[in-house]
Image 1 (tube, rainbow, N blue to C red):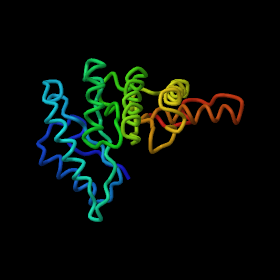
Image 2: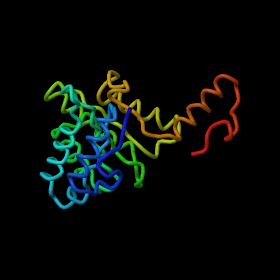
Image 3: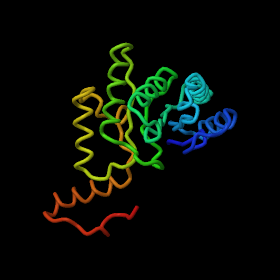
Image 4: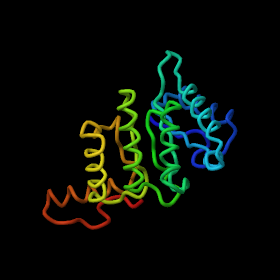
Length: 202
């Protein structure tokens, strides 16, 4: 079970609220926590504050048995303005203890893009080379067609290897993509496309 915490989607709340939110979700049985970085702090150069918040939220992911719920750190790349900022935020999230780095909340445009996802994959590739540790990547929002998804899957395979094509290392966050996958599978099974009412409407 996954839960969003830390004042999703804005990330603008006191640290005490974010930690209580996270601890409550973990106590309720959440296996994964999605946190959002404070983009205001990041964009004003307060990287230490952002780092410390991620470290604290990671500690709040600790269960009573000493294990941890997985922490996905949402960067909201559409608000970070530059590739340099996205790369810096990716490194910061991993160094602070994030198990996954995620592009977006889905509330900001642009959400996931292929160039941004490539950049984040390069960061986790370089992290693995340095430490041997594998960090997940999740592009979320804006991926609507199977054809688009294939481009991302090829990028993953060519950047970090086919080994990364597993749910604990790479996932899509795209509800409308599921509908297109269902329509494509129906086409393969029947030989023709179904109408839009064959699947749910987002």
